[in-house]
Image (cartoon, rainbow, N blue to C red; front, side, top):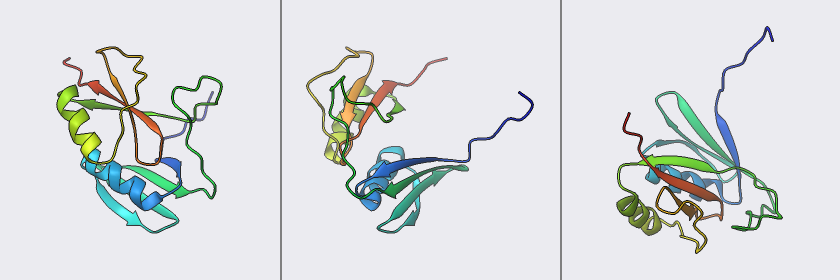
Length: 123
């Protein structure tokens, strides 16, 4: 391949972009750089994540293996237990099914999309 691209940003489908961006802004400590009902964005150090309104958006069921998985974010944290408590207080939910054992924790964001918290790498 002779041509390569640079990732400009990640855009995620959402039923409520403002709330979705607000949740991840709080969880990641990123700034909300755009906020409208149809589209919201968070950014930090030149990296952005956008949340676009999709009418009729339905989040995936967890852990429904027959449904297509859309995406999930893996987030590094210093302490899984502390992060889980804080993220649940911010609006996340912890499903019963946890495939990672003690290696990571699956949480569900306020619009129903799974994400994982993982211990920060020590290398």
